[in-house]
Length: 208
Image (cartoon, rainbow, N blue to C red; front, side, top):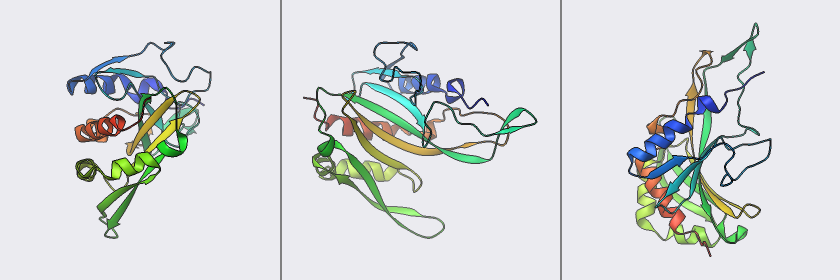
């Protein structure tokens, strides 16, 4: 059974989007030595190399998957896609010389109001030293409130093995019913202000 593979993910379209934002971004070759994951089982769907920003690489994952594919099932031997929203994760990777896992790991929490049309009233970071620094930045908090939607999530995940820290923003994307349309990047899934906020977060990560 074949899933929605990298060719549907639109990482090349994401790269072009970053270029439109004035970011120096290029796609890494599939077997680049700069890639983070190098084994046969990969969750990252390729990499975008970024220059002049506080993060170094960008990739996409499907939340809850263990490989770079997401199967919607088959009908009479033909793969289909149901009307379903899949949380896509945008990983902004910061290279560091050492990783303080306890101090760096953080999760954005949201307070909402309303039962049907939920609205976010406040956000805050939970975690160690990095979470404290981010909570003290009122401009960053205000920025996140402007683009954050109730179904979105943000977290910071240190990876000691690879000496990186991932800033992860997730927003569901609808995969249409019928023959597989796959996922096509839409700039509404990662608004400009989210990229700016992520860059500010990356600046706060201790790279020493």
